Amino acid sequence: MSEIKKKLSENMKTFMKSGQKESLKHARSLHAAIRKKEIDDRVDLDDDAIIKIIQTSVKQRQDSIEQFKQGGRDDLVEAETQELQFLTTFLPKQLSDEELERVVRAAIESSGASEPKDMGKVMPVVLAQVQGGADGKRVSQMVKNCLSS
Image (cartoon, rainbow, N blue to C red; front, side):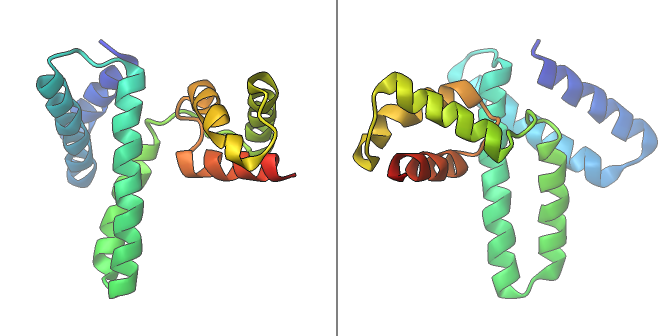
């Protein structure tokens, strides 16, 4: 069993015992997303695959928060923000801009990229190295900046 699934299971037990209904709801939602993927693909997911599921959920929550803010639905913004905070506890520590830039510059050097159109050579290398330590959008922006300068 993966470490994330163990942690999630322990959290669910704790939330049930302590009566934390909202946290339990978030934990069950994540558990259901993981189980759905496992059943659909007929595999036992490892931590890397679970991190991808969590990242997708985080991105969905961020998009929802933006939409609800534009619609003036502060109640839904609050609910989505709470779930977003819960989900981020399962993600690896995010890289600082300096750490990400070092990884990007090393990938540019190793791939031989020299201009912005070579971005396709660099992105897979960087994403493989950061593995959840940075959002894809953030990585893309950093690669563009480094290749432009």
